[in-house]
Amino acid sequence: QVQLVESGGGSVQAGESLRLSCAASGSRGSFKAMGWYRQAPGEQRDLVALITYGSTINYADSVKGRFTISRDNAKNTVYLQMNSLKPEDTAVYYCNALAWSGTNYWGQGTQVTVSS
Image (tube, rainbow, N blue to C red):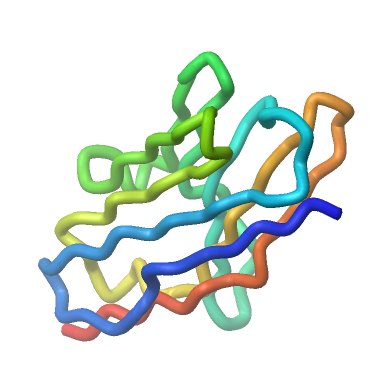
């Protein structure tokens, strides 16, 4: 049973930074891609950043230049460094892992709150 455990959320002031981590357990191998999505109240869940096993990266336009995604394939862990946070970044952030089989796994979510 694959489990994704997120950590690093919290409450900060605008302009400050946070680093999210997500560790996958229960998998025999690595993942095709790992990433972060976020969902604000009343909104849909949207992609924030995605990194493939080969380190191809995609960012949402709203976070380009401020957020950095990275992963450790040996540890099945993905990170999201969030700098220059804005109030509009406030959301629940979900870790996602896409297995080579096509199965999607989700973490439980971690709250990020940015106040002005």
